Image (cartoon, rainbow, N blue to C red):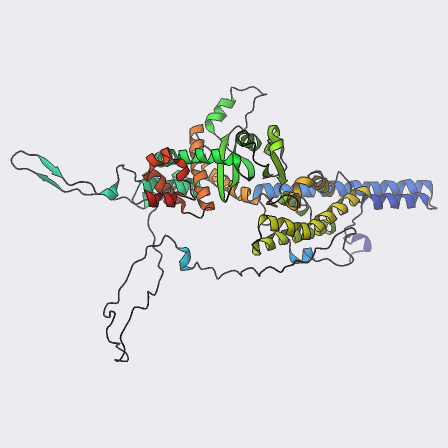
Length: 538
């Protein structure tokens, strides 16, 4: 049987101020000086040990997240419930949402409706025995009329690349021996690798991350072998045809209203070889920068791979911006690599609120009460932004909506955080203190959405976009040369911009290859959002 001394102690949460007050009480007590010194040392040791345990635990959690990733940053419902006793002082209650937005649509049953199969082939199947104006076989009195088709969906499988052998008929003259060969059908195309095959390879590798060697293995199993080197040549052909559009998008990007940006490390073997000849002071890193640019009513994705960081690539774009235009809203995280320092007068910085929230989410276990308060308050802000979308508010209306509903919440959080530090309820060097310091230091950027029309809350759109690079990097690991990296930038930019425009990337790449001369002459007419209108006039 365990004694009281063997029982597991409960966790003691104590702030710096509470500990300081307790030490003062001990010093003011009637205990002997020896006992006072001993108790103060025990209390100080407890705080030190608790702080070290906190840091080690959080470091292990961060390490696990780096290796295995975070499944979700959502907080369980029981973690966001606020009891009156646990509610921190200085907190602000979320304001009521008015007008009430429509309820979001519930999740489906897991099946995709026929309307989503936009590329499906429609095959008319007439009734085998009946036709219009025939006598009704049931009542024998009425006449039949066309009621429209009953659509039945069937999904078939096939190889990503399908080979066709055209057996051209040949005739030879028995007298002069001249040979007459049937002409090649137009559908065969002029090249061994059809433009549709080039487009499919580009979509598989640069759109979904399937590496060339894996597709080579699959095609060989299915009886249509296509070596990985051939696949790269096919992708290069597609990129060369789409390059004029990519360059034109880079000309449009400087004059966009919003820039979202971030970057991710990448390996380029030719640059890695070059690093061996560089000095210690030379830059040896390499990364792919991803941009989401809103230009008028359209949205573009741009990828740039090289030694420059996202902020430097953004500066190259801003250098070409029309000085008569208003400042561009630039969304990113707070990394200095994402700042174009030479063009700050052209930019309104808007920082990702997700990053500020994430700092509190990661230390939830160590500081449950305080972190729960911050996350719940920010949850109201995210809900307000979701409501503005459900209400289909214009950017100006959205700004007013956030100023009315989100501004009191954010101001309350600001007051709460400042009081925590001023009252010494939080140790500045603790993980909670660092999370609060980050929030207060970048307050203007994190709250741009309540001051700037159209400013987003987070950089999630760019981070989702850059996952395309990460997905491809996991399978393909590296580019061999800077030319290969350029091909990847062109194709990923075109594919993702087509997705933003709601167009089929495969059909878009096919159209660019089939009209390559016209694309080079007038690339502005072959952007993903207007190429279909151009095709109608060709």
